[in-house]
Length: 109
Length: 192
Ligand SMILES: [Zn+2]
Image 1: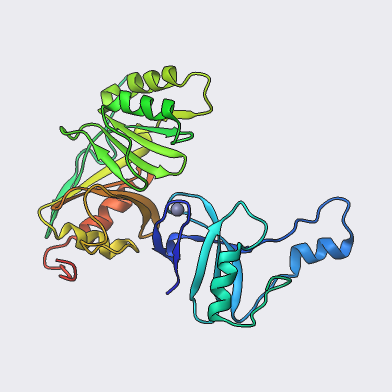
Image 2: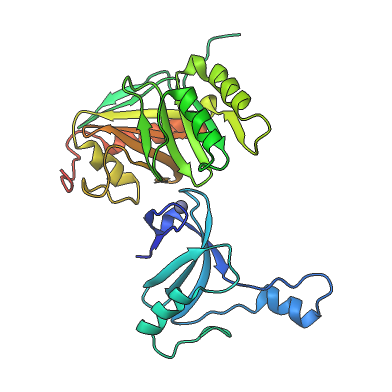
């Protein structure tokens, strides 16, 4: 079972109270970008076994978006954090390093 | 204009706890900066109730008025049905020019009461992915969640009763779910 804690309202709920929003921290490539960039933005998503960063929405709760760092293999959640950021905060990365030494995700490590 | 009627006209059924549709309730959605003094003052002036904490509800002593925390920028203002328009106008006047939204949503909602003992927890625990252990949830808390397949919210006016809020459009579905979950001899006896 995947349990998430919404940082906006503090509620810890079971997965079905939330709606998944796909991979986190994507850089949007729109008009003016190259075909390769636009293609990568639309289709080239991470699908790791292990540490992953995602967007989630507390759909049946406070309604707000947030970010979650979790392990796709064990469903362990390393932490959740504000949606208003473009990269994982240091404290989240430190927590992951403590449990998954040597981890990396895209350019993040 | 014909008189307003609640979704199920006060339908009720007795199982191991009683399920009843509560009738009309005035409800105003107030959205804005909940930390703003003006907003807090307007909400309190309209209800006589202090601001609730995050994910909490504060109810007036007579039980008619309440303020429930819905989201970081959303408050649910509960007043008597007949007073909703008047209270809404009062809030809007108090917050004139501010970046807020206040809407009368009374007719968009349905309310149910479960009563008859601490087993009301069992009914909700069957339908919602929420820890209903007495140590985890109790009076004064307000929880928005999923009830079977629809969004809902609930709180406990006291240890022996539960109030459930849902959209009016799914009132019949929710009523049937609650009656089914409260059916006689279907207690799970996990929490109480
Ligand atoms: Zn939330």
